[in-house]
Length: 394
Ligand code: PLP
Image (cartoon, rainbow, N blue to C red; front, side, top):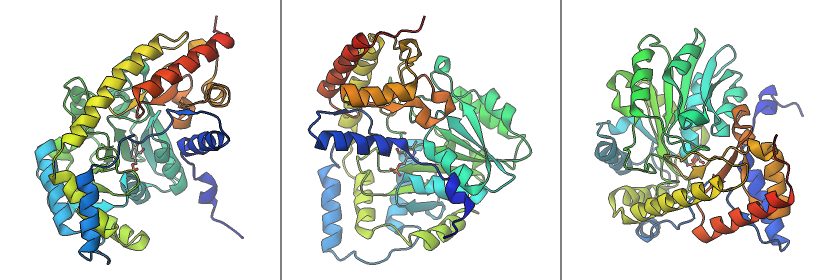
Protein backbone atom coordinates (compact mmCIF):
# COMPACT_ATOMS: atom_id res chain seq x y z
CA UNK A 1 0.00 0.00 0.00
CA UNK A 2 1.25 3.46 -0.79
CA UNK A 3 -0.27 6.10 1.46
CA UNK A 4 -0.01 9.83 0.87
CA UNK A 5 2.87 11.48 2.69
CA UNK A 6 0.43 13.75 4.50
CA UNK A 7 -0.76 10.80 6.60
CA UNK A 8 2.63 10.60 8.28
CA UNK A 9 2.28 14.23 9.31
CA UNK A 10 -1.14 13.84 10.92
CA UNK A 11 -0.92 14.25 14.69
CA UNK A 12 -3.39 13.32 17.39
CA UNK A 13 -4.87 14.34 20.72
CA UNK A 14 -2.85 12.65 23.48
CA UNK A 15 -5.74 13.25 25.86
CA UNK A 16 -7.41 10.27 24.18
CA UNK A 17 -4.29 8.10 24.78
CA UNK A 18 -4.16 9.04 28.46
CA UNK A 19 -7.88 8.32 28.72
CA UNK A 20 -7.32 4.87 27.17
CA UNK A 21 -4.43 4.11 29.56
CA UNK A 22 -6.42 5.36 32.56
CA UNK A 23 -9.36 3.19 31.51
CA UNK A 24 -7.10 0.11 31.15
CA UNK A 25 -5.64 0.69 34.62
CA UNK A 26 -9.11 1.19 36.09
CA UNK A 27 -10.32 -2.03 34.43
CA UNK A 28 -7.35 -3.83 35.99
CA UNK A 29 -8.67 -2.75 39.39
CA UNK A 30 -6.54 0.36 40.01
CA UNK A 31 -8.56 3.25 41.44
CA UNK A 32 -7.84 6.10 39.02
CA UNK A 33 -8.79 9.74 39.53
CA UNK A 34 -9.29 11.15 36.09
CA UNK A 35 -8.53 14.84 35.65
CA UNK A 36 -7.33 14.27 32.10
CA UNK A 37 -10.61 14.41 30.31
CA UNK A 38 -11.83 17.54 28.53
CA UNK A 39 -15.55 17.12 28.88
CA UNK A 40 -18.15 18.20 31.45
CA UNK A 41 -18.93 15.59 34.09
CA UNK A 42 -22.62 16.54 33.90
CA UNK A 43 -25.33 14.86 31.86
CA UNK A 44 -26.95 16.63 28.93
CA UNK A 45 -29.97 18.58 30.32
CA UNK A 46 -33.08 16.34 30.26
CA UNK A 47 -35.15 18.76 28.15
CA UNK A 48 -32.51 18.44 25.41
CA UNK A 49 -32.57 14.63 25.60
CA UNK A 50 -36.39 14.73 25.42
CA UNK A 51 -36.26 16.93 22.31
CA UNK A 52 -34.07 14.34 20.58
CA UNK A 53 -36.38 11.48 21.56
CA UNK A 54 -39.37 13.48 20.31
CA UNK A 55 -37.62 14.21 17.02
CA UNK A 56 -36.92 10.51 16.51
CA UNK A 57 -40.55 9.65 17.32
CA UNK A 58 -41.74 12.40 14.97
CA UNK A 59 -39.87 10.72 12.12
CA UNK A 60 -36.81 12.92 11.69
CA UNK A 61 -34.80 10.04 10.28
CA UNK A 62 -33.59 11.21 6.91
CA UNK A 63 -30.88 13.40 5.45
CA UNK A 64 -31.12 17.10 6.22
CA UNK A 65 -29.65 20.03 4.27
CA UNK A 66 -25.86 19.75 4.37
CA UNK A 67 -25.49 23.09 6.16
CA UNK A 68 -28.10 22.17 8.79
CA UNK A 69 -31.88 22.53 9.11
CA UNK A 70 -33.09 26.12 8.76
CA UNK A 71 -34.85 26.24 12.18
CA UNK A 72 -31.53 25.36 13.83
CA UNK A 73 -29.53 27.89 11.85
CA UNK A 74 -32.17 30.50 12.75
CA UNK A 75 -31.93 29.47 16.41
CA UNK A 76 -28.12 29.85 16.27
CA UNK A 77 -28.55 33.31 14.70
CA UNK A 78 -30.91 34.32 17.55
CA UNK A 79 -28.48 32.93 20.13
CA UNK A 80 -25.57 34.79 18.57
CA UNK A 81 -27.60 38.02 18.67
CA UNK A 82 -28.59 37.40 22.30
CA UNK A 83 -25.15 36.49 23.58
CA UNK A 84 -22.72 38.17 21.23
CA UNK A 85 -24.91 41.12 20.22
CA UNK A 86 -24.26 40.56 16.53
CA UNK A 87 -26.73 39.92 13.73
CA UNK A 88 -25.71 37.06 11.48
CA UNK A 89 -27.67 35.75 8.48
CA UNK A 90 -28.54 32.03 8.89
CA UNK A 91 -26.98 31.37 5.48
CA UNK A 92 -23.56 32.11 6.99
CA UNK A 93 -24.05 29.38 9.59
CA UNK A 94 -22.94 25.83 8.82
CA UNK A 95 -23.93 23.09 11.28
CA UNK A 96 -21.30 20.36 11.53
CA UNK A 97 -20.72 17.19 13.59
CA UNK A 98 -18.73 18.78 16.45
CA UNK A 99 -16.70 21.91 17.01
CA UNK A 100 -13.66 20.20 15.53
CA UNK A 101 -15.12 20.04 12.03
CA UNK A 102 -15.14 23.81 11.59
CA UNK A 103 -11.40 23.94 12.35
CA UNK A 104 -10.79 20.95 10.06
CA UNK A 105 -12.59 22.68 7.17
CA UNK A 106 -11.00 26.09 7.80
CA UNK A 107 -7.48 24.66 7.88
CA UNK A 108 -8.18 22.58 4.75
CA UNK A 109 -9.36 25.75 2.98
CA UNK A 110 -6.24 27.78 3.78
CA UNK A 111 -3.43 25.28 4.25
CA UNK A 112 -1.10 24.08 1.50
CA UNK A 113 2.67 23.93 0.99
CA UNK A 114 4.09 27.44 0.95
CA UNK A 115 1.35 28.87 3.18
CA UNK A 116 1.79 29.72 6.86
CA UNK A 117 -0.87 29.31 9.52
CA UNK A 118 -0.47 30.74 13.01
CA UNK A 119 -1.84 28.88 16.00
CA UNK A 120 -1.66 29.14 19.81
CA UNK A 121 1.03 27.14 21.65
CA UNK A 122 0.25 25.67 24.13
CA UNK A 123 -3.01 25.09 22.29
CA UNK A 124 -5.53 22.51 21.14
CA UNK A 125 -3.31 19.90 19.41
CA UNK A 126 -5.51 19.45 16.37
CA UNK A 127 -4.66 22.93 15.06
CA UNK A 128 -1.02 22.01 14.48
CA UNK A 129 -1.82 18.48 13.40
CA UNK A 130 -4.15 19.68 10.64
CA UNK A 131 -1.84 22.51 9.55
CA UNK A 132 0.96 19.97 9.06
CA UNK A 133 -1.40 17.58 7.31
CA UNK A 134 -2.13 20.21 4.65
CA UNK A 135 1.59 20.83 4.11
CA UNK A 136 1.36 24.42 5.37
CA UNK A 137 3.97 25.70 7.82
CA UNK A 138 2.73 25.93 11.41
CA UNK A 139 3.78 29.18 13.09
CA UNK A 140 3.24 29.01 16.85
CA UNK A 141 1.90 31.97 18.81
CA UNK A 142 3.66 31.45 22.17
CA UNK A 143 1.37 31.96 25.15
CA UNK A 144 3.00 33.06 28.38
CA UNK A 145 2.09 32.28 31.95
CA UNK A 146 2.96 35.82 33.08
CA UNK A 147 0.25 37.17 30.77
CA UNK A 148 -2.33 34.68 32.05
CA UNK A 149 -1.73 32.73 28.83
CA UNK A 150 -3.31 35.47 26.71
CA UNK A 151 -1.48 36.25 23.48
CA UNK A 152 0.15 39.60 22.89
CA UNK A 153 -1.35 41.34 19.84
CA UNK A 154 2.05 42.85 19.02
CA UNK A 155 3.69 39.43 19.05
CA UNK A 156 1.00 38.01 16.75
CA UNK A 157 1.17 40.95 14.34
CA UNK A 158 4.97 40.82 14.38
CA UNK A 159 4.95 37.27 13.08
CA UNK A 160 2.55 37.83 10.18
CA UNK A 161 4.40 37.62 6.89
CA UNK A 162 3.61 37.53 3.18
CA UNK A 163 2.81 33.80 3.35
CA UNK A 164 0.45 34.01 6.34
CA UNK A 165 -3.03 32.88 5.33
CA UNK A 166 -4.82 32.18 8.59
CA UNK A 167 -4.45 33.09 12.27
CA UNK A 168 -6.10 30.76 14.78
CA UNK A 169 -7.23 32.20 18.11
CA UNK A 170 -8.82 30.43 21.07
CA UNK A 171 -10.28 32.26 24.07
CA UNK A 172 -11.16 30.98 26.64
CA UNK A 173 -8.45 28.49 25.87
CA UNK A 174 -7.70 24.83 26.08
CA UNK A 175 -5.36 23.79 27.76
CA UNK A 176 -4.58 26.91 29.82
CA UNK A 177 -7.98 28.38 30.67
CA UNK A 178 -6.48 31.68 29.50
CA UNK A 179 -8.79 34.49 28.43
CA UNK A 180 -7.62 37.20 26.05
CA UNK A 181 -8.61 40.67 27.31
CA UNK A 182 -10.82 42.71 25.00
CA UNK A 183 -8.16 45.45 24.67
CA UNK A 184 -5.73 42.90 23.25
CA UNK A 185 -8.32 41.81 20.67
CA UNK A 186 -8.93 45.49 19.80
CA UNK A 187 -5.21 45.94 19.18
CA UNK A 188 -5.01 42.79 17.09
CA UNK A 189 -7.98 43.78 14.94
CA UNK A 190 -6.59 47.29 14.46
CA UNK A 191 -3.27 45.79 13.36
CA UNK A 192 -4.96 43.31 11.02
CA UNK A 193 -6.12 46.27 8.91
CA UNK A 194 -2.61 46.19 7.43
CA UNK A 195 -3.06 42.55 6.39
CA UNK A 196 -6.43 42.41 4.61
CA UNK A 197 -5.59 39.05 2.99
CA UNK A 198 -5.15 37.23 6.33
CA UNK A 199 -8.17 35.25 7.58
CA UNK A 200 -8.94 34.54 11.25
CA UNK A 201 -10.38 31.41 12.85
CA UNK A 202 -11.71 32.23 16.33
CA UNK A 203 -12.37 29.09 18.36
CA UNK A 204 -14.90 30.22 20.97
CA UNK A 205 -16.15 26.81 22.08
CA UNK A 206 -15.66 27.79 25.77
CA UNK A 207 -17.43 31.17 25.40
CA UNK A 208 -20.04 30.42 28.08
CA UNK A 209 -17.36 29.46 30.62
CA UNK A 210 -15.99 32.86 31.59
CA UNK A 211 -15.53 33.72 35.28
CA UNK A 212 -15.12 36.68 37.62
CA UNK A 213 -17.87 38.60 35.85
CA UNK A 214 -15.69 39.21 32.79
CA UNK A 215 -17.95 39.00 29.74
CA UNK A 216 -16.80 36.87 26.83
CA UNK A 217 -15.08 39.03 24.20
CA UNK A 218 -16.02 37.66 20.80
CA UNK A 219 -14.16 38.28 17.56
CA UNK A 220 -17.57 38.52 15.90
CA UNK A 221 -17.93 41.98 17.42
CA UNK A 222 -15.60 43.47 14.80
CA UNK A 223 -17.60 44.19 11.64
CA UNK A 224 -14.39 44.99 9.75
CA UNK A 225 -13.50 41.28 9.96
CA UNK A 226 -16.88 40.00 8.70
CA UNK A 227 -15.50 38.97 5.31
CA UNK A 228 -12.54 37.03 6.75
CA UNK A 229 -13.55 35.71 10.16
CA UNK A 230 -14.60 32.13 10.81
CA UNK A 231 -16.16 31.65 14.23
CA UNK A 232 -16.18 28.18 15.79
CA UNK A 233 -18.66 27.26 18.53
CA UNK A 234 -20.88 24.35 19.41
CA UNK A 235 -22.85 22.44 21.99
CA UNK A 236 -20.23 19.97 23.32
CA UNK A 237 -18.97 21.93 26.30
CA UNK A 238 -21.83 24.37 27.00
CA UNK A 239 -24.58 21.76 27.09
CA UNK A 240 -22.47 18.73 28.08
CA UNK A 241 -23.08 17.21 24.63
CA UNK A 242 -19.61 15.94 23.64
CA UNK A 243 -20.93 12.59 22.48
CA UNK A 244 -23.76 13.99 20.37
CA UNK A 245 -21.34 15.45 17.81
CA UNK A 246 -22.72 18.81 16.84
CA UNK A 247 -21.15 22.24 16.42
CA UNK A 248 -21.35 25.22 14.13
CA UNK A 249 -19.22 27.64 12.18
CA UNK A 250 -20.11 31.19 11.21
CA UNK A 251 -18.40 31.78 7.90
CA UNK A 252 -17.85 34.80 5.71
CA UNK A 253 -20.63 34.91 3.09
CA UNK A 254 -18.21 33.84 0.35
CA UNK A 255 -16.90 30.82 2.31
CA UNK A 256 -20.14 29.37 3.71
CA UNK A 257 -21.02 27.59 0.41
CA UNK A 258 -17.51 26.13 0.31
CA UNK A 259 -17.79 24.84 3.89
CA UNK A 260 -21.14 23.32 2.89
CA UNK A 261 -19.51 21.71 -0.12
CA UNK A 262 -16.86 20.16 2.14
CA UNK A 263 -19.70 18.88 4.34
CA UNK A 264 -21.40 17.29 1.32
CA UNK A 265 -18.13 15.59 0.40
CA UNK A 266 -17.49 14.43 3.95
CA UNK A 267 -20.47 13.70 6.21
CA UNK A 268 -23.51 14.86 4.13
CA UNK A 269 -25.26 16.35 7.16
CA UNK A 270 -25.50 16.16 10.93
CA UNK A 271 -27.75 13.57 12.61
CA UNK A 272 -31.29 14.94 12.23
CA UNK A 273 -32.63 14.38 15.76
CA UNK A 274 -29.48 15.91 17.25
CA UNK A 275 -30.19 19.10 15.33
CA UNK A 276 -33.68 19.32 16.88
CA UNK A 277 -32.16 18.70 20.31
CA UNK A 278 -29.66 21.50 19.63
CA UNK A 279 -32.56 23.93 19.05
CA UNK A 280 -34.00 23.00 22.44
CA UNK A 281 -30.57 23.48 24.02
CA UNK A 282 -30.32 27.04 22.70
CA UNK A 283 -33.93 28.11 23.19
CA UNK A 284 -35.00 26.11 26.24
CA UNK A 285 -34.24 26.94 29.89
CA UNK A 286 -30.58 27.74 30.56
CA UNK A 287 -30.51 27.02 34.29
CA UNK A 288 -28.63 23.70 33.84
CA UNK A 289 -25.85 25.58 32.02
CA UNK A 290 -25.78 28.30 34.67
CA UNK A 291 -25.56 25.71 37.45
CA UNK A 292 -22.78 23.83 35.69
CA UNK A 293 -20.73 26.98 35.09
CA UNK A 294 -21.21 28.08 38.73
CA UNK A 295 -19.96 24.67 39.85
CA UNK A 296 -16.93 24.88 37.53
CA UNK A 297 -16.17 28.28 39.03
CA UNK A 298 -16.26 26.84 42.56
CA UNK A 299 -13.94 23.99 41.55
CA UNK A 300 -11.65 26.39 39.70
CA UNK A 301 -10.94 28.35 42.86
CA UNK A 302 -10.57 25.15 44.88
CA UNK A 303 -8.14 23.44 42.50
CA UNK A 304 -5.95 26.51 41.96
CA UNK A 305 -5.63 26.97 45.74
CA UNK A 306 -4.78 23.31 46.19
CA UNK A 307 -2.28 23.24 43.31
CA UNK A 308 -0.49 26.30 44.65
CA UNK A 309 -0.06 24.52 47.97
CA UNK A 310 1.82 21.63 46.29
CA UNK A 311 5.60 21.72 46.58
CA UNK A 312 7.11 22.83 43.25
CA UNK A 313 3.74 23.79 41.70
CA UNK A 314 2.68 27.30 40.73
CA UNK A 315 -0.70 27.95 39.13
CA UNK A 316 -2.22 31.14 37.73
CA UNK A 317 -5.98 31.56 38.09
CA UNK A 318 -7.56 30.64 34.75
CA UNK A 319 -10.23 33.07 33.54
CA UNK A 320 -12.29 30.55 31.59
CA UNK A 321 -12.96 26.99 30.34
CA UNK A 322 -12.46 24.14 32.86
CA UNK A 323 -8.71 23.66 32.91
CA UNK A 324 -5.92 24.65 35.27
CA UNK A 325 -2.39 24.71 33.85
CA UNK A 326 0.14 24.76 36.69
CA UNK A 327 3.85 25.32 36.18
CA UNK A 328 5.60 22.22 37.54
CA UNK A 329 9.19 23.05 36.55
CA UNK A 330 10.30 23.46 40.17
CA UNK A 331 9.35 19.84 40.94
CA UNK A 332 12.39 18.77 38.91
CA UNK A 333 10.22 16.59 36.65
CA UNK A 334 9.64 17.15 32.98
CA UNK A 335 6.00 17.34 31.97
CA UNK A 336 5.73 13.98 30.20
CA UNK A 337 7.63 12.20 32.96
CA UNK A 338 5.39 13.64 35.66
CA UNK A 339 2.25 12.83 33.64
CA UNK A 340 3.34 9.19 33.26
CA UNK A 341 4.51 8.78 36.86
CA UNK A 342 1.36 10.31 38.28
CA UNK A 343 -0.77 7.95 36.22
CA UNK A 344 1.27 4.80 36.87
CA UNK A 345 2.29 5.38 40.48
CA UNK A 346 -0.32 7.71 41.94
CA UNK A 347 -3.32 6.74 39.79
CA UNK A 348 -3.99 10.35 38.76
CA UNK A 349 -4.67 11.09 35.10
CA UNK A 350 -3.57 14.54 33.95
CA UNK A 351 -2.06 15.67 30.64
CA UNK A 352 1.52 16.84 30.00
CA UNK A 353 1.71 20.42 28.74
CA UNK A 354 3.90 19.18 25.88
CA UNK A 355 0.82 17.46 24.42
CA UNK A 356 -0.28 20.99 23.52
CA UNK A 357 2.95 22.22 21.94
CA UNK A 358 6.59 22.87 22.74
CA UNK A 359 5.75 25.85 24.94
CA UNK A 360 3.82 23.47 27.18
CA UNK A 361 7.04 22.03 28.65
CA UNK A 362 7.08 22.58 32.39
CA UNK A 363 3.29 22.45 32.73
CA UNK A 364 0.50 19.94 33.33
CA UNK A 365 -3.15 20.29 32.34
CA UNK A 366 -5.71 19.50 35.01
CA UNK A 367 -9.34 19.33 33.95
CA UNK A 368 -11.61 20.31 36.80
CA UNK A 369 -14.63 18.75 35.15
CA UNK A 370 -14.62 16.38 38.12
CA UNK A 371 -16.11 16.54 41.61
CA UNK A 372 -14.45 18.51 44.43
CA UNK A 373 -13.92 15.16 46.20
CA UNK A 374 -12.12 13.71 43.17
CA UNK A 375 -9.98 16.84 42.87
CA UNK A 376 -9.10 16.72 46.59
CA UNK A 377 -8.19 13.04 46.31
CA UNK A 378 -6.00 13.71 43.25
CA UNK A 379 -4.17 16.53 45.02
CA UNK A 380 -3.59 14.37 48.09
CA UNK A 381 -2.17 11.57 45.94
CA UNK A 382 0.13 14.02 44.15
CA UNK A 383 1.26 15.44 47.49
CA UNK A 384 2.20 11.93 48.63
CA UNK A 385 3.90 11.18 45.32
CA UNK A 386 6.01 14.33 45.49
CA UNK A 387 6.98 13.62 49.10
CA UNK A 388 8.12 10.14 48.08
CA UNK A 389 10.12 11.48 45.10
CA UNK A 390 11.91 14.57 46.36
CA UNK A 391 13.76 15.86 43.37
CA UNK A 392 13.29 19.61 43.52
CA UNK A 393 15.13 21.74 41.07
CA UNK A 394 17.99 23.66 42.76
N1 PLP B 1 -11.87 23.54 20.30
C1 PLP B 1 -11.29 23.41 21.50
C2 PLP B 1 -10.40 24.48 22.00
C3 PLP B 1 -11.53 22.25 22.26
O1 PLP B 1 -10.95 22.12 23.46
C4 PLP B 1 -12.35 21.25 21.73
C5 PLP B 1 -12.59 19.99 22.47
O2 PLP B 1 -11.90 19.62 23.38
C6 PLP B 1 -12.92 21.44 20.48
C7 PLP B 1 -12.66 22.60 19.80
C8 PLP B 1 -13.74 20.38 19.82
O3 PLP B 1 -15.00 20.24 20.31
P1 PLP B 1 -15.97 19.11 19.78
O4 PLP B 1 -15.94 17.99 20.77
O5 PLP B 1 -17.31 19.79 19.70
O6 PLP B 1 -15.51 18.68 18.42
